[in-house]
Image (tube, rainbow, N blue to C red):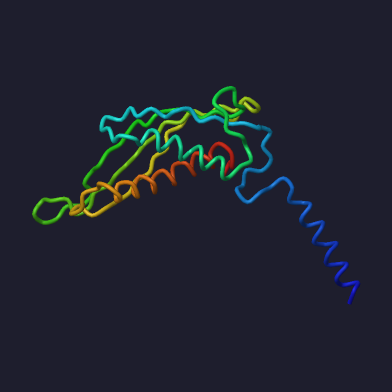
Amino acid sequence: MKKIYSLFALISLFMLSGCSVYNFTGTGKIDAKTFQVNFFQNNADLIEPGIDRDFTLALQDLIQNQTNLNLVTNGADLAYEGEIVDYRITPMTATADQQAAQNRLTIRINVRFTNKKKETDDFERTFEFYKDYPGSEQLVGSALTAAIKEIYDRITQDIFNESLAKW
């Protein structure tokens, strides 16, 4: 019985040592040590105050939580910059009396990613996501905050996947 436990421990050790290049976020081995997220200016036609700051912080938080990279203010190995290019509310479906039955909040963000360690990873790309809500409701207060958070969660994860996870 002792031999079985020893064999099991030895197999487990080999299996775990083979996972040194991969982690659960999918980032694999990153040569970079630091990252910076420059302020994402709100250049959308429709302005919602504070969404630029909230997005910048959301992207910083996601990268800090899913990697061991250090956040710096300049000279980083990895740099994220860009702008919010669209913030709009559009009716999606209508009722029989020509009123919106459902609306959609859409946010589009242009991102420029620079990797000083591996320049082939650099990109400039637009990321977009939306949140649908009933046309009878006004998107204000906590409902607006929750909708923006949901959109930012998706967009920041997409940016992370494109720049670091390579999925």
